[in-house]
Image (cartoon, rainbow over all chains, first blue to last red; front, side):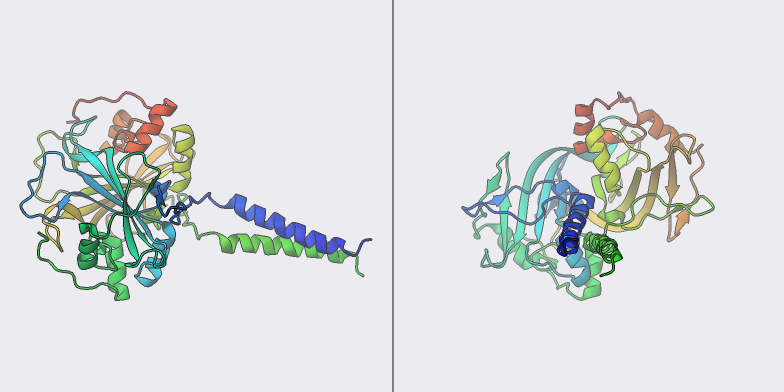
Length: 199
Length: 199
């Protein structure tokens, strides 16, 4: 009997075990931010299968804005790895990816007669935390159409200053995500945010 | 050399491989419906980490209902295994679990001045498909407080007849879930539903 047989068997079974592990996983979507060689963020795939944080309807920072008849829904998702880290620490790890999906609202369809349900997607924006890549740690990206990748929005845009000044936890609006708001309270990571309107 | 050594090694490595697999899994929450010995549905844990389908605000089937100042949000989640099956087939497999979470809406807080964002949880209801357990395949359950389990709502309740008559796909309101509506259209599993109001 070849003495090396047990060693080969051990290696083979380890490989088989790894293959079993990979096959048995529930096909997690690729969720880490991916960039092109030119530094553009690739469109996050399968974000609808990430962790949903909350949805709002017709939210506006402008007190003089008029509510439209069918205002838009804002749906916010975060990648599962970042979510799990937040549950443990109340803070966002590097490689956190937020997706803001904007959808039309509809009022009359099927049996619905009142209120609003969600319709076509109108916009998609992404916020990424990557301390090595971005001097301010966070960057914003817009995917207005079918573009597969996007360059960072210039840091002079209002999204940067508004998130930095008003986000309850590290550049993010945890004050509007009820389950994470409770986590941040328990972890002591919530910071006071102004209640005065942003003009 | 003991000839049984390689066999023991193979078994040991298989066990190690299985342990590696279990440890390396991303701790998927238990998502299949679980019942007590008395036939009560156990409260689904971690449904906020399931697949979110959509949210509506102040939806009502009653055309004479008045919109309240702060109507409620309806958030709908489904267990990931059922979601993956739906993407493939446009139909719901046995052991599908829907969770409807109702939350208060808030309008003025932090920097928000218009529209509605989500607040405290007001109610939680569950719909389960289990053809062996329920004669009509589907059953509904309410978790009004902190109850850990719930008996099925009696089949005379209006939820049964309304879902059966108006659900666009197999007792569920896929017409209000924009991404699944598209899947059902492509798979040909959408059925015509009445557009007349439910009184």
